[in-house]
Image 1: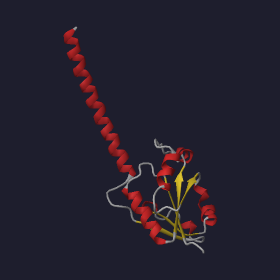
Image 2 (image 1 turned 120 degrees about the vertical axis):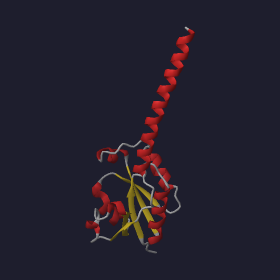
Image 3 (image 1 turned 90 degrees about the vertical axis):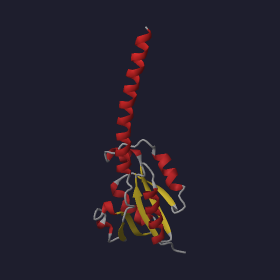
Length: 154
C-alpha cells in the first residue's frame, strides 16, 4: 500500500501546544507524517542556540501520536532528498515561512498552515529572558538585604 506522506521541519526548541496543533493539522492532510528536527549543529550554523539537546527534542517529537517518523535535519538543502526518500506528496510548514519553500513545488505540493494565535517559541524565549532579568534583580536586592543584616551582627 502506498502512503500519502506529509513532511515538515522544526527546531522544536521549547515544545508547546502550537507545535502540537501544527503537527496534528499536518498529519490530518495525509496518511503519514515525517518530521525533521533540526540538529544542534545545524541550529548553531543558523545562529540559534539550543539548550534542550537534539536527542531530547527528537525523542519528544517521536513520542507524539501524530508523527510517524522523526528524522534529523542537518542542512537546508536536504529537503528535496527527504521528499524523494520518503515519497512525500505534501511539504508543509507554518505560515511564518510563506514563500520560502515554494521552489519545492515541482517535487510535491507545498502548503503553509496558520500558526496557533498568541503562541510562539520566540515569544516564550523573550518572556523567559524578562523573567530571568527580574529574578536576577530580586536576588541582588535580597543579597544586599542579607548583607546589611549580617553586617549589623558583626
